[in-house]
Length: 364
Image (cartoon, rainbow, N blue to C red; front, side, top):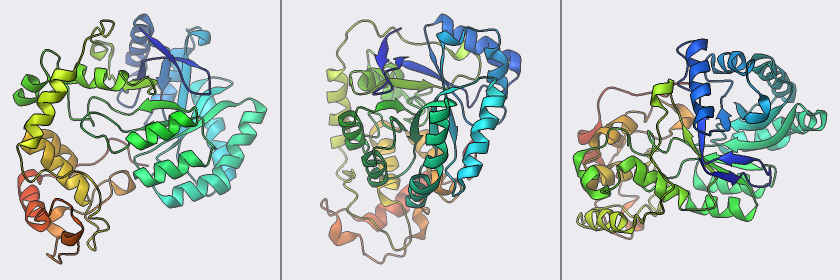
């Protein structure tokens, strides 16, 4: 296992972190999973108040372990009530059975309102907890827009950021750059599942990423960037804790060339410039068309269905209406540099990807 400095926290994190959102089978399963993670060299475990009984199970597992071996992150939602934040910190400490939280993240800083709450309320309680030694470092986790993430980083309130980024979603690249300038730790959320369901890739993607599996390809893409500290690995049990051998310095450039060439074949590929927003019908046009891009270029239709069905079902975690809300108003058309027939592509994408509604595993 390799280790990297987590920004100005100066904590030496393993390049993979154990995320415990899915590790909820029983306290015994949590214990076994944590033990296996430590055997593999993982020294950072992430949980959250909103992850069911994760904090409780993790607290039980930690009783038999040397805390010097492990760094812990837990997450709390943003709130207007500083006293509520303070109470939640104490409750997390009690469930985890520890005296101090290494890293506390605002969980789901996804809207401008959330940022306002943190700046004016939550951060006061967190700073007080840091002064008292109940918390060591503070950061934020986000599914929000790039503009919001950049604004949150610019506040200089935070020492680390948890965000989405992968080869298949590079919109947040400027946020990684700014976080690095601010000497913040960078934690990548779900580089396997939400990056493209890379545990179960389509054959087209397997062929394009060869000789690497799509999952190893994405891991290498991310970890080739020294600004990124650690990648989340959300195992439900110890059997799922298996990593590719990343010690060999192998180039992924040929795979990148093949992937880019395949994407270029489709004349209707969206460049993800975001100039089409805002949409009068609150359709997240770039995200809809990104899912179309992946389905048409790499046959990632199953992933597209999984994500598309979350529109209108996951609140601020996955905002935007479905593409069938398009009224053909044409507002987006003159702003598209590719001159795409956006209404037509929206209808086609809806027909291709719509199905049974989806939702987040945990809602806050």
